[in-house]
Structures are given as C-alpha cells and as structure tokens.
Length: 476
Image 1 (cartoon, helix red, strand yellow):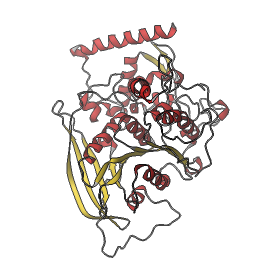
Image 2: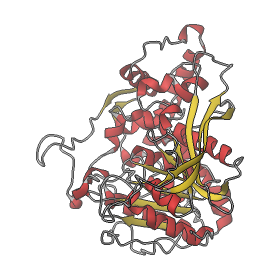
Image 3: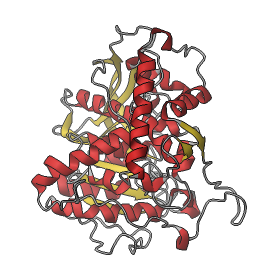
C-alpha cells in the first residue's frame, strides 16, 4: 500500500510538471545554465527536497560519512532482482520467454530509471572524411587511416551543432575486411604518423611494459576506431542543454526519463557503427565496443542496447557500470546522484539518493534493476569484464568484488541462451574473485583482473585471443 501511494503521488507530480511545461512561459533560458541550475531543475521535477551526500572516499574509517571498505558491511541488501523471474513472478524457463517478455521488462526499467530513453526524433547523422592517409604505420606495421566527422542534421534547432569525431585505422596488409574495436577516447584522434622507409623510431618497446591497446590490435590484424565521446555530449551537467541531448530538446532541460550522457555516448557508438558498415576495410559483423572508467560504463550501455555489437571490453567501470548498486563498498549511488556525475544517468536516477521527496526516502534497494541485469542484456554476445588492482591505481573505490558478483549473477541468463558464462556456480553473495591474472575466459561471458592499474590495455591481448576463438578470426 505504501509503495502504491508513493507511485500515485509521483505520477501526479509528473503530470502537473508536464502541464506546466506545456505553457509558453515554461521555456527556460539556458544560455548561462550551470551544473547547479540543471541539477536543481531536475530535483524540482522529481519532487526531491533533500539528497543524501555520497560517501567520502578520502575519509578514514570512523570519520563522518567515510566510505565503507569492510566486506562484512558491504551487502546491506543481499537479494538482487532475479533476471530470470518476470515482474508477474513467473520463472523464465526458455529463451523465447527471455526475448519476448523478460528482456523487454529489464530494458524498460533501465531506460526509464537508469540511463534514459533515446528520443524518437533524433536527427540523422551524415559521415564524411576529414583527412585520409594511405601511408601510415603503427609500431612499424603499415596501416590505412581516416579522420571522420559525423555531422548531425540540426535544421530543427540551428543554435546547436553536433559533429561526431572518429579516427579509423586498419592494417594495410589485410587480405580482407577486419574486426574493429570502437574505443571511447577523447585523445589520440590524430592519424598515425607516415611510415618511415627505414622503420626508424620504431624500436621494440620494453617487453615488460604492456603496449598501448591500438598497437596490440593492429599487431593482431584488427582495426580500431577512436571515438570522441565529448564531441557527442559534454561530460558535465551544464552540457545537458547542449550536445546531442540539447539539440533534440532544443536547448531546454531534460525530462526525468530523458537520456543521460552514458546513453548519448552509446548512441554515438551506434552511429559510428553505421559508418563502419559502409567501409570496405571493416568487417562490421565483427565489430566491438570498448571503454575504461566512465567510458567503460558507456561501453556496457552500448553493448546492452545495440545488438549489432558482437563483443565488448568493459574496463574498470565501477558504480553505474558493472558494479552492483545495492553494494555498500566504496563509491555509492549517492556519489552519482548528489555530485557532478548525475548527468551520466537519466534524471529519474537522482531520486534514489533522496532523503526527503514526494515519494519519501529512496535508496539503492528501491531501484528496480541492478548491474547484473545490465550485463544480462548483453547476452549471449561476447562480454569481457576487466579490472586492474588497487595497488597499481585501479582504486578499491570501484568495488572490483561487486562487479565480480554482478558478473556471476548475470551468468544464468547466458546459460539460458545456450552459451557458457564464467563458470563460477557459487551464489553471487558467496562468489570470490579468482586470483589476479587468472582469467575466466572459457565462455562468452568473461572476467579477468590484471595486475596493473586503471586501464584495460593489459587485458587487451587476452581479450583479442578470447574474441578470436568465438568470432572465427585468425590473427596473422
């Protein structure tokens, strides 16, 4: 009864807010819109009057609001939503029920409450080549390179221009189209340097150091595409009235279920894939998505909602990515809802940090889904969850154990769909990460924690070898 009343009051508030937005005088001047303006606007739409602060990751244990790093206190809500039980309480016993009933339920919850919806009226993207090189090299390997721009049609609101930036690099000596990994990156968008006749300045790297990811990909016969996420959508709340989100909303603030930056970046990855499908050097049927940290979150969202991606490398994604919302370890839901990170998510996500609101107090246990179900939406495609170690800079704040638990909890969906998971049959609350550098790579769901820091390049070699087995590609 309490939940029913809260839902009624919340729906009534949205109706009233919607009616206000229909009025001509509801147009908001966002020309000097700040993060605080946008955040407060969404709280008012949601009827939230008081947010809890996020845990302090720098405070020592025992200090006020210190983040928890005690495993004994990490699972205040140990029961996760079951991905294989429908909202009506029916067990999902066949793949057909998953595809027709349960998967759409989970996807709807994520769109409405977590990452937001992509509007129906998103304009078309037209790709063009800004610069092209037929004589470049990556670590001495000849490559083709293109700098590309995806211009978003903006006749509906000319005040905002969106030009998606991408650089595509493929091996020049390939005998046919090659797999390509789209990599979220705001750097390294320049074309590879021209190849030197004497191959000078391409001495072998220190074998004790992991090579950058592009070098590994090219050496294994793959291509890569650097995609600049901030050319799609800014990484801050003030930017929500600009970029692709602002263009579609004609410069106005978001509604509670509108998309956030993670979903916008994922949308941009889909548009990049549109281009790859037209490029003769690329085998777009073997295309994947990759990202680290916030871009690891975006890569997981892209893989979950874009079925054309056949694989994903999800690096150190933490809260809002592969780590469980219901865990109390390191970063928490409140760190996103109360901080400069809220723009990653749909506006509705903010209410789960509410101490006082029209719906009362809400927290992580009120979220209808959790991270294991986002991983489940990727099934049965190739999903590699990657982390480093805290000692080398992949902070404990990310809750590597919570992501491992989520990976274990997603396993039953992969198995239902006829593919292997990571092979850990423990209950997720009892699951313990394997030793560092021991990969669980036998199935289409994979886990590996490497012995380096906040990156996934150390796992790139293992990812490529694992993916090659499943996609049938033979590296040179």
